[in-house]
Structures are given as structure tokens and as C-alpha cells.
Length: 479
Image (cartoon, rainbow, N blue to C red; front, side, top):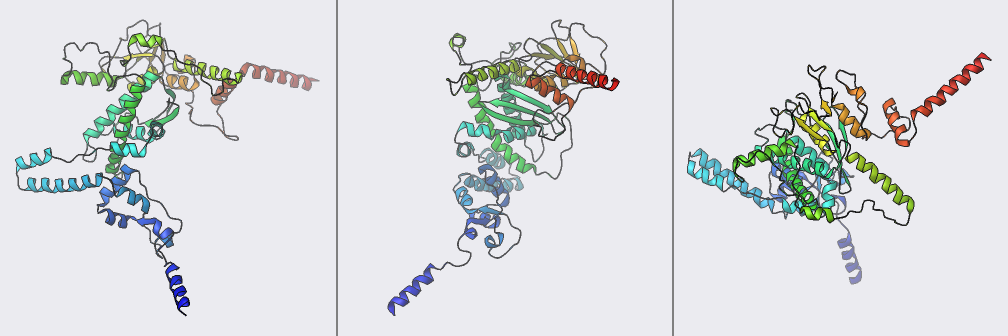
């Protein structure tokens, strides 16, 4: 009887109660997480964005809700336990105390105490979070697409209550630095203009990076967007992009922060505020090359393997690698030896970035922006980019083409005929290089032409064959 009693007790212990195992213990609701972390809803959202924690929809919602199917936001319990040890939580609480003290001093009209409290504003860094989320540099490059798109977008925002000026200026500086690296390394591969903006694709250290830049137009900001959440993302992305720019510049033997060979700044002393302002303006113009940190004597002695291959014993792979390397070199030097001049009505920054990324020289009127390298009267200019129906004074030594010629030439990987892009001409369709046609899809005639050229077949052979077939069919009809 004693043994039976002990067995019954063990069975009672082994039996698990309902909702104390499985999915019910793997999730936690948002309200429970806020109570556990002792944070407000705004600080909890901010912390989750910085740490990369997102809500999850449970498969068995009734089990997780302990019999309730009410709509709730759930997180993994292990994620909440992970962020509960984050040092930034302490900074959030310090900032609450700081805001309370500052409000009290302002209400009492104690100006000295309010200024002293503002000077001791709590600050924190996100360096350790970047290192946690991206253990290696390649991991950061793979996730930099959204980072670039958000920073380019935030750099166009005006200063408002929800968008602070510091983040706007920081986003602008970091994006300009990244564009300078793409120009120096000739990493740009594809460009496409759409209604949403201009899409770019670059190849950096073997990783394909795509981002979109909004059009430089004035627009009304939508009111239904939560700009505080966007600023939280930008706060993390600017830290990430700063690390990426530093790593890319140092690996490419460039000074960071970037330095230019600036002319015409002898009047300003180096290190002064005037010199810094002029340097930043010329840096944002994108018209000058960056200084290299490598000595000039060492640049000639270094030899680079041009055609690396995994299997050096296979001659087919080596030949294929040589062909691909030749195509890439031609694409990188697509505009080499050409001099462009931009009219006032065309998007200056986008065209300067694209043309210089493929080896061309570009300038504009000095009254538009600083950094112009030559004037419109220069006889060595080969192409002038215009977006108007006619021009009163034209030079016979250059072509006057519309901006789409630059984009289409890059996507076609060759210089297209300029006759189709003259002033006032009806432009051919601007095809996206990011779209891959599948079987059964409609393919425009221009895309078919590009596909034929890529495969090596010519239209002449097709046309000759079709003419022969027409002649044969007409002879049969006559017989």
C-alpha cells in the first residue's frame, strides 16, 4: 500500500498543468513584456527596433492566449529575456529623469539651472548593438540595402519637430561618402528611373547592393506616417553606415573622413570653420577625386591577379573568367574619355554620380553649385545633357542628348546611338534592368534586340532569313 501511494504521488507530479508547457510558454504578449521590462510603449518600440526584435504570429493562438483568441501582439519570450539585459534601458530611464528635471526648471523659470541640466543630457552609443547584430563585415554589407534607402530618404526631409536636423545632416554626409566610394571603386552596375525614385545597384566586395534614391522634388509629407519610428531606424542605420564607410575607405586605401584635392581654398586656413564648409560643399558636388592614403611609389609596384578562378586546372573556367573580366572592365570605363556638360534643368547630382562612376568627366554652370571644373564654352566637351526642346546657341563639336541616353547606355553596357536621344526626339522605352522575363511574358522589341545582341546573333541574319522565306512563298504563289 505504501508503494502504491508513492507511485500515485509521482504520477501527480509528472502530470503537467494546462498552459504551462509548449507554445503557451514560448510567447509573451506586448503588455506583459512592457511590464517585465518596466518601460513605456514608445521606449519598448525603440528598443526593439535597435535590437532587431520583431513580433511573431503564433501558430496556435488559442494555446498561447490560454484559451483566448483576442487580437494581441506576441513576442518570443527568449527575445524579451535577451533584451532585458541591454544597457540602453538604463539610459532610457536616465532620460526620463532628465526630462522631468528640465520641465521642472523651465516651469520655475530658472534659466541657469535649465541650461545646466541641458548640458548634462544623457547620451548613449549603438556601437555594441551593431557588433552584436553583425558579427562580420560581410553580414553588414548583406543588410545594407534598407540602410542606404532610409538614409537617402531621410537626407531629403526638412527640419521638423519629428525629424531632427542632426540626423538629417548626418544622413546626408554618410550617403555622400558612400557615393564617393562607389565612384572611386567603379562599383556601380545598374540604374533605373521609376516613379518612386532612382534605383541603383552596385557590387561591393562580392555583394550585390541595391537601393533607391527619392527624386529631388518638393512634396507634402504624409501625416499618417510615424516619423519617430523612422528616426529610430535612421539612428541605428547611420551608426551602421558609418562603420561600413570607414571599413570600405580603409580597405581601398582612402582617407577617412574623405579628403579632396581642393583648389581655390588658399584664402581659408585649414581647420577653420570656413575651410570645413567649403570642403563639405565641394565634397557634396561629387566632381573631384579622393586622396589616396597609399604612397604613389607603392601603387606602381603592386600587382593584382586579374582573373581569379576556383579551379585553375580547368581551361574553360579560366577563359570564361577572362571574358567576364574584360566585359566588366569595359563597363567600368564606359564613359572614359568623354566630357559631359549638364544644363540647368537636368538632375545634377544623379548624373554626376553616374557619369563619374563609369569613368567620365562632368561639369556644369558655376552658378548652380560649387565644384564646376570647366565651362560650357570648352571645345573638348563631347556631350551636353539637356532636357528641353531646343537651344539657341549650339556647338557643332558636341552632341546634345537627353538624360535617358546615359541611363540606357549603362543598362545596355555600351554607348547607344545618340540619334534616338536628340533634343525633342520621342524617346525609346526606358526598360528596367532588374526585371527578368519568364516564359510567356510580354517582351518589348527593344528588350528582344538586347537579348539577341547578348547571345551574339544579329538582326541582319534574321531579316535575311525572313526575306528569303517571303521570296520563296511568293514564288510558290505565282506557280
